[in-house]
Amino acid sequence: MKKTVLISGLLALSTAAFAAEKKSYQVNGMHCGGCVKNVEREVCKLEGIENCKAHVVNEKKEIGTVSFSLKPGATLTEADIKNAVEEKAGYKFAGEYKAPVGKKKKN
Image (spheres, rainbow, N blue to C red):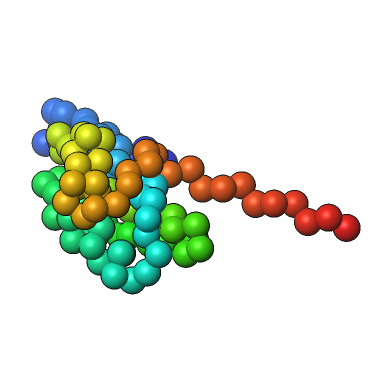
């Protein structure tokens, strides 16, 4: 829902313009809490990131994610995230995370 803020009766601004952009990326090679800490340590310290968390999605397949919000006006790129994941933390960056669609149960 969009809200409008009236400032001094002269200028109306949309609060949607100030909303943080949410991002989630897949990280391959993560299988434990230590992996989560390594990815969080490198990605979450990047300039412009807030509310950053990493998770192991599938321990057997070693698939994890790192999710965060970009502060308004942040100039961080996907290449910056990839560098933090691969060069700094030592895992495989696999691009934007798309949550798997649930399997239908057979009757």
